[in-house]
Length: 72
Length: 209
Image 1 (cartoon, each protein chain N blue to C red):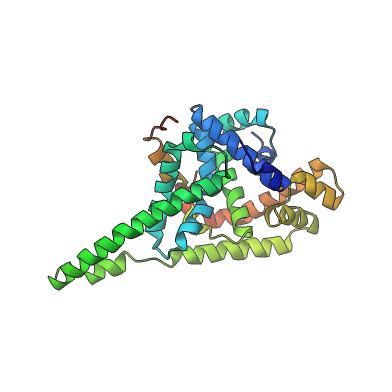
Image 2: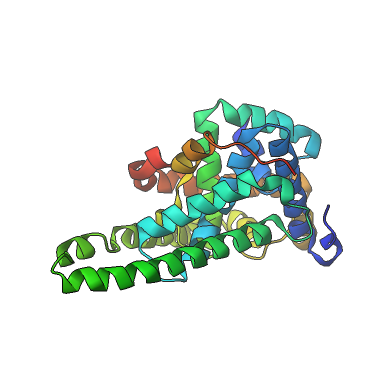
């Protein structure tokens, strides 16, 4: 997945039909995940949100892996 | 799914649609979709929780707990509010529950203190660290300086997107340039900033996605 598509992904500019492909690419691409994380951090920083303390992704993902979604 | 979409700006409506797509994909079994929601909202959620003046470790714990509750109860999200509003309600309830239990604990600690069991050193060591705030300020300085240094074309496009919250089409209309040029300028601006930030953020890379 190209970096410019990652930039469009976080801006919700990718067409819905391309979202599946984007998520598939992200699930196995560490560099792509890193790029998304940094692009998101830049946006949060520009909007004045605290950035450094709030990058919990890995810990949250590890916890999520042990959780099942409750039925509706 | 988005009853209030008409009232939103074009960019906000697109964001709401992306969130709805990610929720649907998560419910269909794609956990990467929910991970993207975490990346999108973790700082905003932590910033909300931090208003209660909690220490950094507690903010992290409560942020994690809120995301797990949201993930577990995702089927209950009906799209009647934005995903973040729904998530924020969960986070605030989680924080209030924590604060209630802490008040109970504080009462217990006071009793322990009377019995000579309270450890003030441990209490100090468990307090907030200023390290993160320094790093935050460094990031903010780098971003501001880099924004000042980059070409006006790139700065303008990224500012309209990130600060003013405009959609790509709105930016194209405002600047009178093609949509693909908007996409390219925003991406290039982010790349310039990411390059400058890399040395600083590699320190905490293991914590990221």
